[in-house]
Amino acid sequence: MQKNPFVITASVATIVVVAALATLGVLSAFAGEKSGLEKSGRQHCPKVSAKAFKDVTNPDYGKSLEKLASCR
Image (tube, rainbow, N blue to C red; front, side, top):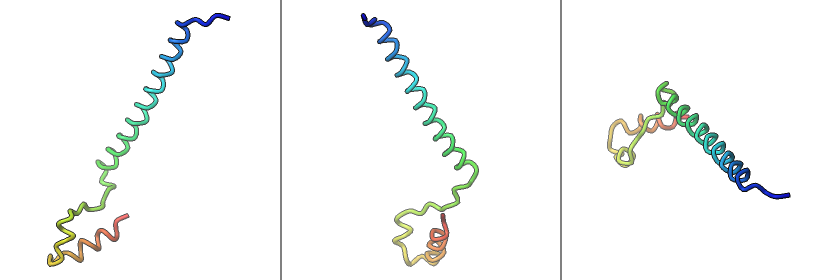
């Protein structure tokens, strides 16, 4: 039985293209999900810088810690 190099090359190219399209689809779905969560406001956890954590003399220090503690 002789192996046809054209068939082998076409098969490998098809597999690579299908794998690339599947990966692209999964990544774009994941990016769309993250984008949708950010737009819907479901990420309600505040972003606090390291400087804010170090500044214990700030009168609102306790409130910011409470917000972070209740964040899920």
